[in-house]
Length: 88
Image (cartoon, rainbow, N blue to C red; front, side, top):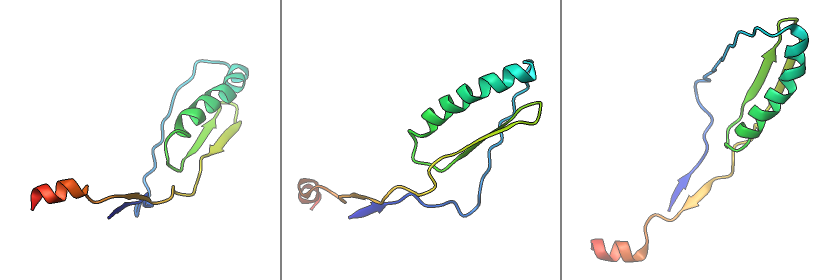
């Protein structure tokens, strides 16, 4: 039996994505919740822990944290009996 697990990275890797906006601060603050919700709905489909943080030009900070707990271990059968019999 082979056990696959989600293992926490030993070295923490951080990805910073920066966008330059030509919107007014008021427009940024109006759009950020929709952008945050859209990104959250995409990232929630993947079994990873994440933090989304959006800083607007007028100093507002919007942040969302994804699930921190890794998924349970998945047990995968090593080989089908028929395959083992064929290899013998």
